[in-house]
Image (tube, rainbow, N blue to C red; front, side):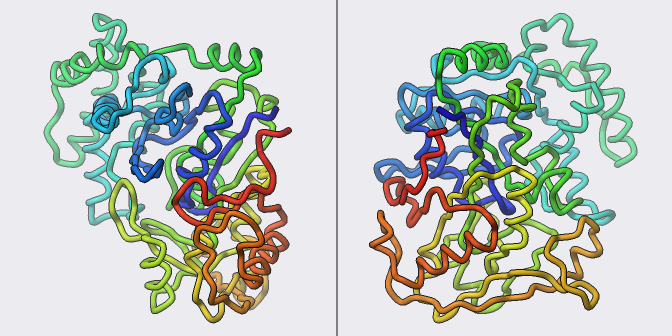
Length: 430
């Protein structure tokens, strides 16, 4: 049996929540390996919606273990609040079904404030962050001054670590014209939540190694899409972590040999939240149609998503950078009723045709999409559970997407309901 990594193959919001939940029935452990509580997803189970931001999808299913890996940055207060929201819906989260890596870095109030100061500033480039402190927390991690989950277990030693952290942050705050933070204030913030977080702390790399050797199936759950990767995304309009599949190993402490299948969640059109290039964006009637039919509003922020035609160039590129084995194509039903559907098959840059998105920010802003036009379909695909339920033109669209991106469709999702899924290839079957 193969352990499976699930990543978004676009800019996020591809429908990972439903697919991960669908796969989690076959898995024993679900692992978050990057990001924080900035990337939400909604699970719909038996008509009940569960909105998750930080917790792995597996926690809503009895008998599954959820793991937050060392590659995640954890806001302890947001964690406690999310556990409380699930408890109000009848989902019990305890150390029996959730473990958090002892070496995961924490997001603090000063990170959220710094994020907001920068994003609200009139100077520099607006990235379109969620202002939840993700980027500043990763900066402190790389700068070797982060406070980690394990530090909550040794409160007497925490004060020296706080002083080290504030030597950096108070200098930044002075430069931004903001009041300095008192060490005691930060200490109290951490001490107040320590007893609520520490029961979940574990040596995650050892846990996963032990369970893998025992034959347990592990599902690695990515957050934002691969095009928001700090190295391979549309820099600087990216998140602050690696979102490609290779991060599953680094962000959880398992070797790459533990991964057998990479599933790329891929929307049948393209969306983006926040700033940055978007070659196939449609701002008129088509964009409104896709946004309305697809209910394109962020789970975490509520922001309206930008919408456009499917971009085969970008998905083909992320298939290569993430080593994607097969894709789960989602939201095909949103395209129902269109007379014609366009697919971007290449770009034109300064008069020449190219088949990739260049790394340069300036070049990304100048690329022009080259489209193919396909005939649409009138019949509905919503709720289809077999290929025979799909209109012929919808099948042609899916097959053409496969051809253009160079990867097969392993699953096809036709509604938010988990059972409205056509299984072509089970990723857990090696």
